[in-house]
View 1 (cartoon, rainbow, N blue to C red):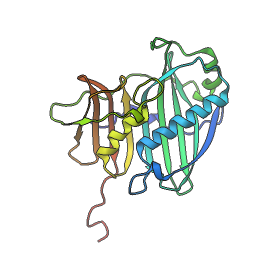
View 2: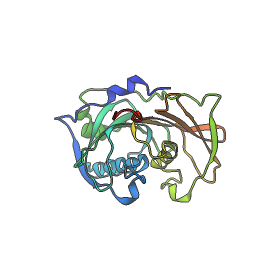
View 3: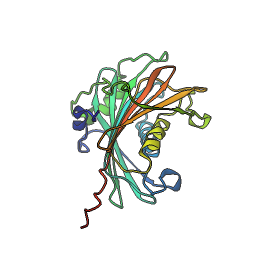
Length: 255
């Protein structure tokens, strides 16, 4: 189950017009694997923080609400411990009720990551609503007229999978009492087990909440370079992810 090719085209250069916001971050000890690579859940937290900083800087009213629908990560070179990162975020596309936020990350040790996150505008009851005019005025120019779809593409788990209990922790909850978006990536890291992702896609269908229980369902492709996983609760898929890993170096590569 490969990452859909229609998502590949989402990665584009930082626009020269419209709103762009830049922040900086240093990869810390709490953000990395034992092999010093930035974890996917820590990367997701970076994306949340730069998005919040951008939104605050834009000076828009605090009445807008969004839920995360999808995140695509393409990582030619993952950041490592101590690396100083520059994160540039901008609007990559619009729909009637959603917008795509892109974040381009570079590092002083050669890190290079592109991310596309789809956020859906909701009302106080959690129903999708049209994007606010003020939001479009502020962010729309950088999208360069591009439109995006909110359709989810990852399917349900196949019949033959590995299923284990997945513990939910109070420390993972956000201000709405849901498991934070970034915490879903921890399940992916558990399956990756120290290997290096080159592309990762996660789609959110509904929230995980305490007390659970939750289950982690997973399968590895036969080539050993793809990991597919689903977090479920009460028999319903709450999030789906697919992680493509860097192919292992053959034993005779240096011969």
